[in-house]
Length: 105
Image (cartoon, rainbow, N blue to C red):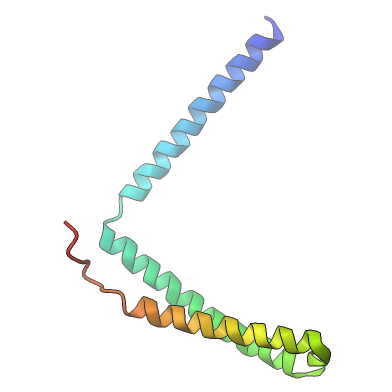
């Protein structure tokens, strides 16, 4: 058997395996209703926001210490404050999303 036949067979097996993986992922994705997907996304956003708030508190304490000296420290501190504000804004926006779906049908 020539090497190109082995290479062709390996390519065919790789394509088939990729197709199987994609089909499996698609079946798992379609197993959720849109409401379930929305609820899961809200839960994940809430968890991420809570983790961000906890992390920002720890980072703010670090920045307020000796590491905040000079221009680099001030820029870093400003960026961290802006990140916290953006995360809080995103959490508030996510809380305003309708839970029961919308007029889509």
